[in-house]
Length: 133
Image 1: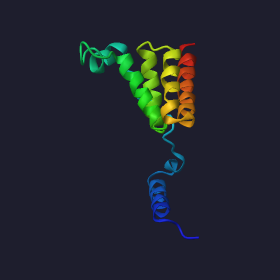
Image 2: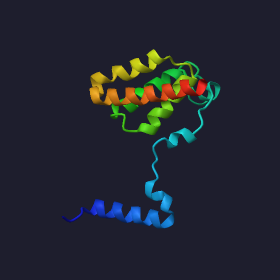
Image 3: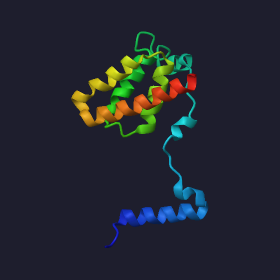
Image 4: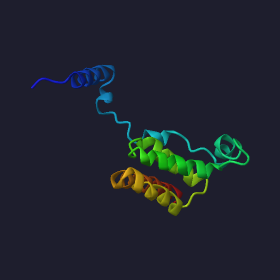
């Protein structure tokens, strides 16, 4: 069975990465977002909250909208969704607010997207609780 051009290209890229470093053969980007620091509540508020528009949305509302948008895309941007949940916790969003924002999207994005986003959010919140203890 012959390979598609994409399969051949991916195989060639994997061989090239392996030649650079054998460790790259098993390298995974899963969890890479953990290396990105969580911004402080004050920094987020100044950058894209009330500091951006005095009469506009605060950082928590903007991040809840971002979470809804990421869920609408099928929760495929896993790292971005995890970072958004981390930042929501930092700005004081409750577990219920996060869950409601995701659950609302089931009507528009479907149950599979909502379920995936909810699973990712639960993982992040569980990890953060573990870090606190």
